[in-house]
Length: 178
Image (tube, rainbow, N blue to C red; front, side, top):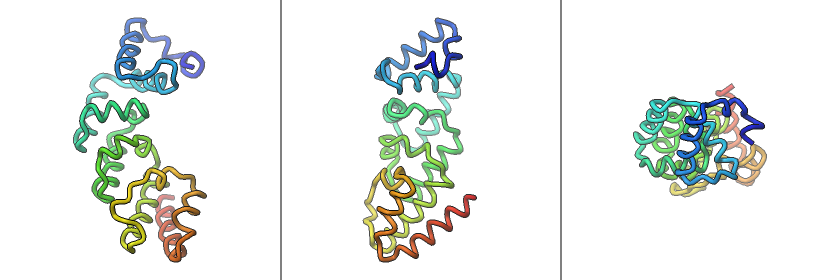
């Protein structure tokens, strides 16, 4: 897969490639899986100092090195996002929604979604549902954020008596991002 989709990676010196390969393997990723290849791409796309800076960003949100590496193993792109993006997403989930940072580490794909087009509008809907007592404040669901647009509308908005009000709020937040 690496040779097919990212042949440039194979131009690394054998010593550097072997070092990255071994590092990814010691993280517990299976060389036969796609995540292994993505992890190699992620690690070869940044310097060691950049990697450390990204670790520090997640640590500032209370995550341990082990949690960060486990998140990386699940979704290697987790470590390729900009500091600004990580801070904004973590701020949304931890400070605005009151979720634990460890929940995000266990579900690292959440960080990769667009703040403007998906996360913020849906977080607004979630906050509204909680404020109206329609969902418990302790509600934690990745489905709320990763569901397709149609599934999200059907499952979380259209079936509610307040659907018109919720849909209006959701669309307002979506339009602000455009």
